[in-house]
Image: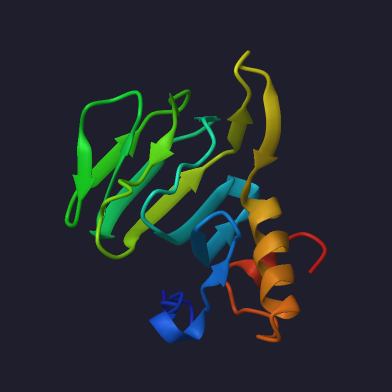
Length: 160
């Protein structure tokens, strides 16, 4: 292998990809997508008191908490700054941030597969996957006048 054959590392600084307000008390920064492998890497900032819809993951999830705290209503453990969480495929839970917390909760998620939002009867209400996240994030950035974000892997997404 020559130096020309070695793949180059790809870097994005914190300011290179904007955070966009999702409208539910959270803001996202989509860092990377790999649609053929079903991977989406997102940094999410949650305001105090936010609860995300109960959902099921079709693939593994890896989470690292940068600041603040959060938990799943279904589990006793609380994730705080420096916590790492692994979720196996099939995991079902409801993410919640304490209402009395000072400041935002900042979490990095690497997610394989889809996030299936569930109703009370465990029926799928909404599906979020790498392709959806790329389209949603890009549209939110463009609507806010921030241009097309340079999400890692977006140039390899089908149709681009």
